[in-house]
Image (cartoon, rainbow, N blue to C red):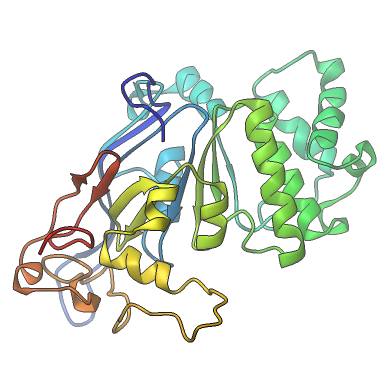
Amino acid sequence: MPDAATLKPVLTVSGLHKRYELGASLFSRRRASVKALEGVDFEIYPGEILGLVGESGCGKSTLAKCILGIERPSEGEIRFDGVDIASLTGAGLKAMRRQMQIVFQDPYGSLAPRMRIGSLLREPLDIHSIGDPSGRNAIVDEMLEQVGLRAEHGRRYPHELSGGQRQRVAIARALMVRPKLVIADEPVSALDVSVRAQIINLMMRLRREFDLSYLFVSHDLGVIRYVSDRVIVMYLGRIVEVASRDALYELPHHPYTVSLMSAIPVARVDGKPKRANVVGEIPSNFNPPAGCPYHPRCFKRQARCESEAPALRKMGKDRLVACHYPEGAPD
């Protein structure tokens, strides 16, 4: 885990809220809102891979979009290299966007179908005036080789490539401008199992070669365990646990994290693995439960959980947990 006392974070998110306002319904004249993010706080340090895990609908992709400026937060602050992103305009905003790039989940949907691969990769160089115009095609060819493709792939269209090759192109496009931070939003979930490991290993190698930090978003606990230095666990728009990878997988503290870990398939010869008792479905962001958002499904819930939302508090040296009665703590 990065040492906060000696390293300055490359990204700091503080008190982030995101609400989507809805119009009045047939049954009510009052305007309603969906709470996608509720008071999110975390940091990403240079060279770190921060894993972000949670069920579908917990706010992972919304958080990624807010960081990149695709969505505007309702409240809170996002600082990149100490600069508040919301305060940037014009050339300053353009320069910041060069430092943060994203790799989307669907490699086909994220690539313009009528542009050749070489043009797709050259476009960021043209936009940010990187390199001499006469030498930009050579930079494109070099980047294709960096991600395991050949220069001839630059003359093809996205539909002429396999899913794994298209994701390599998406990764190459993100790296063309030499960013400091890459947000990987479910980068392997749309790929065949046979090529997932290749793409993950490629991203790990490029992290070292390009000195990158990653926010690695996934619902796959196996992938998160393999790639991450630290892990954030989200539930219904809130962070419920933050810990180093090894500490989290060895002994999860939040009941939701316990439930997630118990769902990981494990080969056993001594009978069925013990499962945490999870009941019901994830609540709606439109009408979240009072108190702790996880209490309707929690195997440790008590009366306090139904009325009082727990704050994210420190447990031990390097762990944060939002729970009144976490695992590993005295009852």
